[in-house]
Length: 156
Image 1: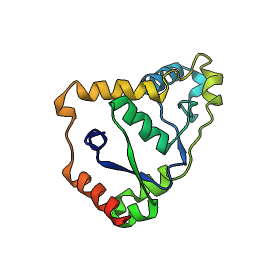
Image 2: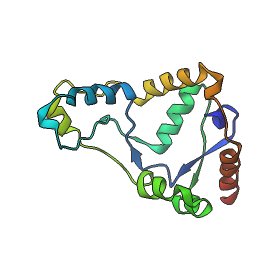
Image 3: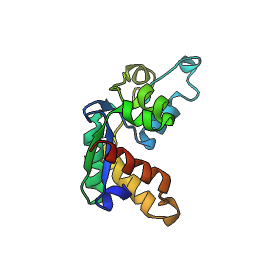
Image 4: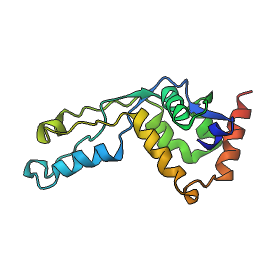
């Protein structure tokens, strides 16, 4: 977000069209609390996610909109990102570079009142307000910022 506010480009992996599911903490908590004490939930796994899914480009654009700026997106392949920093391999190649849509029907059967009601557009506004309320939360890692600059330079 700091890069966007400064007018700097940001990196989105791949072509930005894979979809991802983001769930606001309040929505997750509502589902989780509904499972507590429920004997039918013991030993079971659940997805507790939003039913909204967005492309990565849309996520960055909505984030920029909530921050009052523009997202200048540069697409970089996931393979290139991981080749330049192997620490991204598990979280990027193993997770975020492919589309992720989750089936919430199981939790809705056990917790009939569960609905994710906070769309990303609203949740990111709340998140930004929380970060901006305390300067201690606004620390920019110069190593990460420099890495993003190197990624962008590698595409030219």
